[in-house]
Length: 249
Image 1 (cartoon, rainbow, N blue to C red):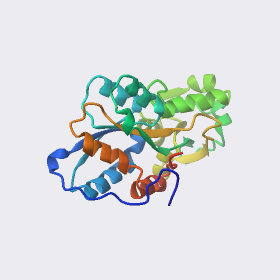
Image 2 (tube, rainbow, N blue to C red):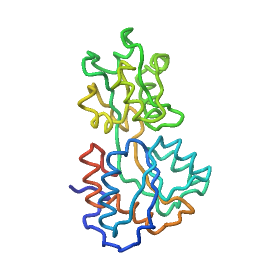
Image 3 (cartoon, rainbow, N blue to C red):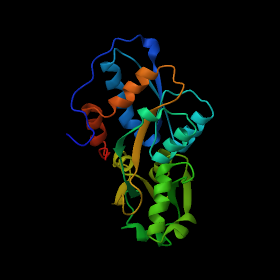
Image 4 (spheres, rainbow, N blue to C red):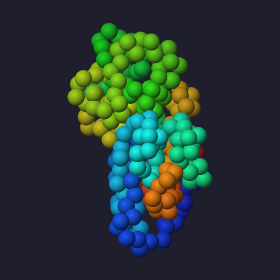
């Protein structure tokens, strides 16, 4: 697998003491991919452990702004990263985009919903969305629904999740008749939900891009920077691709 920005060679192995554990604050939609990538990074870096703090990009950015410890921030949109850069809480020279995504309309398995327009139906009483004020997937969903002329209708039916995984859980548990999540999250729950339709990034909404950067004041800036760079190497990119993420543009 190739692609612009993807590095074809592996990085050299560093023999580092275990106390150089790094903490990565990452968007919830990266949970599955980053857990696997963290294991690969540790193997190639002398056993350096990677610990994760997963949550909505907005909530994680607020934590970092408030001084919460973190060595790396990986967001599901540029907005949160740009906010931290303006506040001088991330190192701009380390910032890079490592993946893209899109949105998916999902329902419980037995639903007959056929498209986004079907969200207007009276039988669709609750629609799960991530909070657009703090969660990128919710912000992109609001943008797409506005373009479709559906935002006012759907907002009246909305059940808001505080991160994309919580939003998906509403659909899985039958607490919502439909939901809009990242396509990668829909893919991860394909045995529990039915994917109805995907959006067209760049047309229906801005392209969801995933940037990562070293947090200012990290106690392990070299190891943290190495993790950010590692995200563009071939094996991490393969993991992301196989889980449904798009390559960096």
